[in-house]
Image (cartoon, rainbow, N blue to C red):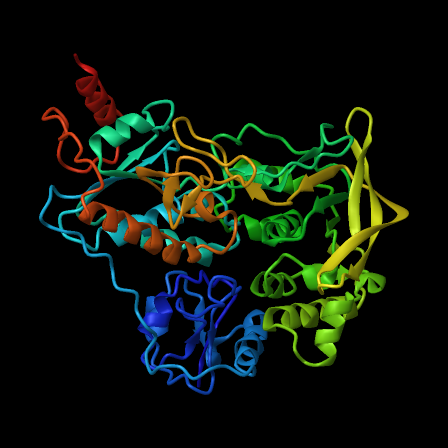
Length: 532
């Protein structure tokens, strides 16, 4: 009886390498790995050994016999992935060898800025080599970034990846420097003085702005701010959100939008069993919101959420998930692919789930509702002293001569009353003092993780980047593993070739052992370095 990958898959491929029969795909060497929404177990090839269960850091793999009712859709999702024609595979998935650090030089010492998944995977890749030391800096007093503060509190399994990161940080040569902000408490130049290299793994920490009239009104905020608020982020604990209206609207339909919609409509008694921030739980207990409308500018086939996220949403108890029947239409390109059974697996699965939502029976008014709307582009947020609603222009989807789907305005206007409008239309990186930045792309310019002095410029030797600040906001927690492997591989190549300057030795006044309260240590080091 096969095992099944369920919704909390992190896609870090630990299970791939643990599998003795190569039945989990796509693997990191396959072209669709970076774009896959989850990994899948082949029910015909699985030998039921359970090795993948032990390897999975988020407990996302379950034997078929132990699937809950909410997990049953994943049995079909996994099996359908293998109905597509695929090339022959080797008996075992190819393993990417760890970068080998030369021992002919001073031991490699690297600073990593940020402590989220991309930072921790980079640290792990470096620490596979003996003698390497890694200093991880983060401005927050607790580590692990979005793995802790960006995952919804009712997704406890996904949050379990932090246990893997705790194991990484316990390795010899690893030191946390928490509560230290690079650019404020310590500079890039100072890090370069005491390390062979610096890796920036700071993510994409701001939202793309929605530039329409009324966006400055109280009651309009970002979904990212709302997530940080209910997760207890120290920079957002003071925030308040008006939940007194019966309807909230979320612009954008990615996974974060679905997370927020689910939290706003879930029974607070169920949330009380999670680690949601107590002040947020109290606010949700007094919320008047009965409906959350999640709005997309394009069509159903272009939905930004992933299959596992939506499959999990439709099984949440006591919440209706519905879609406007008139908006459940396909653009010309998708319709043509559907007619020839050539739809990509993920798109076909989304359409199947969405049709199920459209066909869901009506329930009584005691149930809260998440409504998916499509083909609506926001044009104006309504209100004077605060948000009272939002105006949209209806869109139409056409295909150009190159087969690209484009959305065009129809001139038809639609409005929704709402007391809360949250935007979830993407992320972008933020420039750091002393580090090159591409304002247009919202990333640190780089090639293969090597930072460039400017987009298309020369290499800034010794400075590297990984994660969202390297490639933009794409992929999942585990995607950062292969991203970090590329960056660390290039860093080690530069070190072995002698292209990186040897750092100053740490001052003798600085303790040699790793410290979990390193603010004093770092300030002592800086004062020693700055002495004339």
